[in-house]
Image (cartoon, rainbow, N blue to C red; front, side, top):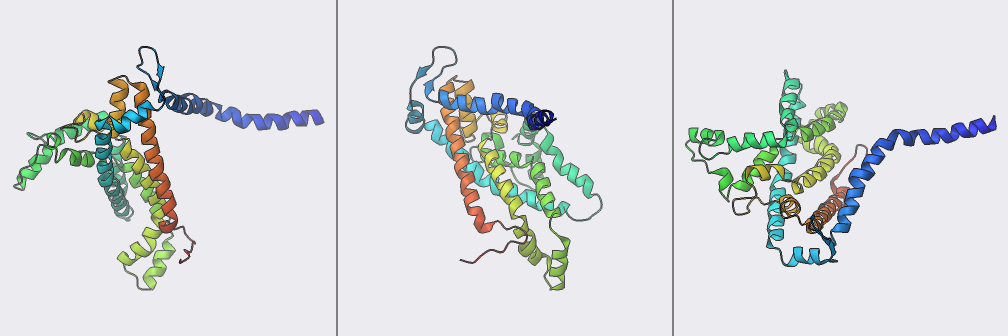
Length: 303
């Protein structure tokens, strides 16, 4: 009897691991394993075809000291992120606030605004190639109706990066829904109490909505930063990094080193540096969150 009970207890401990074993195997084989492997080959001259040669930190030295495309792609990505991240969060928040209103047809508009986020990157790039076309693009057509001569968006160095930002802002339905879920989690009693005290809608937004939405903003900020530094598909299909490398994102730099020039070791070093940048920015945001992220029922101590 005692032996059977021990066997049952042992089996009960094993069963949960059996259920998660498919995910665990997938994580080890397709995520953690390749991640560690890429770190190892970043110290090799790995030409895919041919003999791998250990070069130590030479890949990292070349990247920082002898490769102008590294600094160019990094600067383009930083500029893109500086524009894209705040705009993406602000627009998604505004859309969520609008959809949070109890008006007729709000379910339709939720679906309508979310739909672009499920379109594949290739299809989205084809749509925007038509929209941004300098000769027959729909965007320049609407500008011409207002008497404005539109630029050749994708072939003009001054506007190509702006075009990338506009195209990237299109698929933010997921972030909008996350903000909407955060808004739904704010108690209506708080707004009722504020209204009784004479607070108008603007005051309620800055004193109630925005502070209680900061945990959601924190999550969306982190994911948007990661997304900005991984930007690849649209630029690859729309401009190929041009004109004159004005849309040559860091992710494209990593991609071309790996699959165009077949320098896997060097590309792995590039990718790990990007990982460190994203990790550093994420940690910086988390570190600063104690000063601006509020949770319901929490009281911030004045320093």
